[in-house]
Image 1: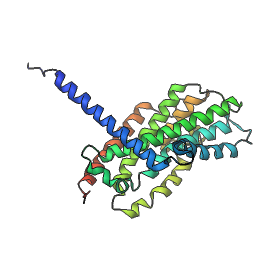
Image 2 (image 1 turned 90 degrees about the vertical axis):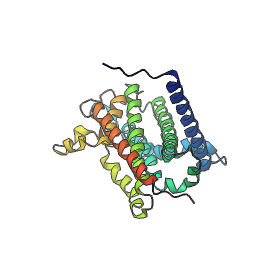
Image 3 (image 1 turned 45 degrees about the horizontal axis):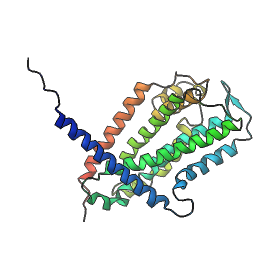
Image 4 (image 1 turned 180 degrees about the vertical axis):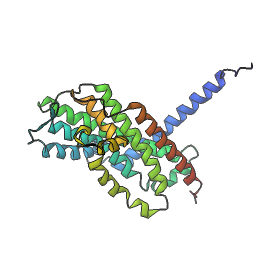
Length: 271
């Protein structure tokens, strides 16, 4: 029986070289996006953190007077702030995907730059900025006694990772779908606002009666928020999320996004 030869050093070296080039391209795009979006005036790049911090801070102030404790000892203030901070990740990545291809069309003159690279750099910028905001505001609440430190930090990080991955995959569909389709682009922002109350950011699955609870379980965002709460609160439970299901959902969504980018790439004409 014939056996396949193992990849030689030349193949492995070529792969690593390609990976290094890809990382350099994404890094350069990220710095360009950072500069064009925030510039160096006023607080400059710090606005990357200041923008989500403003929204999350407003939510925290609105709930600062609530003394309610949800089941399992979850205080209303960290509960709402944590949910909103994680939702901002989705909103920022998803909303900014609309029209991203047209805005960055000149970059495609460079042979090494692809639409995938552009979207990946924008996602990293949004995800990192909002995550730093999350760390700052939750640390502040913990130091002031309004919250406890994360009970299971690795699960919290895993939940944030899934939210970034899910949002990135969805953004690929948006950037492809809204290319030359302004009508669809107009529904992107309203869709985000519709998602806010049903995403799971501000409720626990165990509060929802059946059969609606079973229906919501199939929506990956509700599972991501349950995972985030399991990572942060001691009383979080594992019943309402499945890591294998989340992984498969994000993989399928990203595959559909990449296929849609492949289709739209044939319609892009550089003049």
